Image (cartoon, rainbow over all chains, first blue to last red; front, side, top):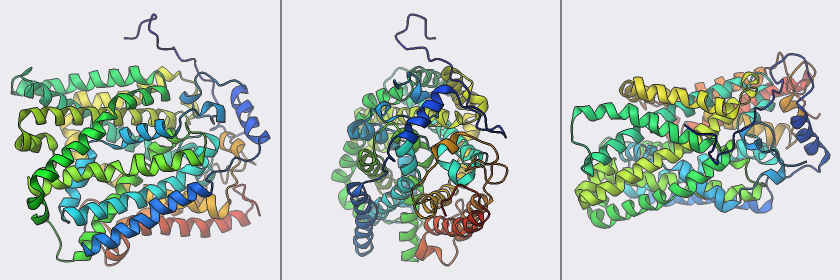
Length: 73
Length: 463
């Protein structure tokens, strides 16, 4: 049991976001602020050119090479 | 805005300044998460059909292919907005339909966690027996439930710090990955001639079928990371930060450590290193391997419980609960299974998990075509969190029928090509695998269905 003197922080309750209600409602202020921060900022990129290079190398080219080598092994 | 102290304990989008995990930290966490007992089981399965070199290469290739699919499916939305795998499905499945992937995630992770924590408890009992702390005997069986509860209590304690707890556990336990590689070196260096000569016991006369099955097992293994990955990569600041950690930290350890099970099953007819290390190196090596197995499962379970708790946080009912309560809700089924039905669960639930796993390939196909082809990278983050008529991801009653039909079509394609339980297969399987056509079929059906959705003006697509 974690006692009150534990260095572990006690998390605060997180207010509800009305994702499952049929009608749109006001979002909790913190969630609203987070969404606004994303809407205000320039669109964030997902993967840049270097990321695509590594993905294609490690996820496509090298596996194909392994498969060819493995088939003839 | 200042970083919320409990941001990583919610399913809300994480702001860039809150995403403090660099590539090294993410790699350690993902590697610790990926390395677990299932690696031996995967290796043993491959070893039924393929020899060491061919099996290792097919498995390695399959794992990398599966991982890149998961990365392309969940990665973009998760890393752009700091959301988890489940929140990332709302643009495809709808503002209510996301409960389908959420249910798959919960059942898959809780199921796997239960299996791994029972493995953990059994390994710990075996370790105590090997160390002479316990006698061999039936009464030790009673220790498995007690150790399960003990492990759940430690995981609960660690995860009270949210993602930091996952990282902390990973920093401690990552050593087991290197111990695993040492065990592999040991077996390979001492039994190389036997290893090369060993014949897989259940190999089909069809050489291509065996090879395809090795690839399929690799793809399937890493596709099952889909439920986990979002909760981890959302802690990193950019796409550039996540690619190498995911491909090298999460995808690479699985085939490497699976080689332990592959080699063990081929040479010593046992994928369990705790059995064969005793044969190869005596009791000291057995103790090292038992410590490895115990630590491996503990790290994976910790990450799984965290990912599952974040996924459940998307349910409105659970958003009102404290993190402590959510952790208890997530851990409780694992503890109950370990206490009351460990043996029954061990015997029966593996089949159910194999069936659940069929859904992850179609899920990836749907997400990839939605993000890259239909939406061209445009996600309405507000619509991910706001439900109701007129909202972008409301579709019809909060459900996108195109996604549901596509998911079903993908699952049927998989099962039509390969029975995941019996491995009975259809003609096309040997050329195509089962996961890749399942993902492609789901993607195609989703694309065609979405054309109708777009024509109806639903789904928030730009026209």
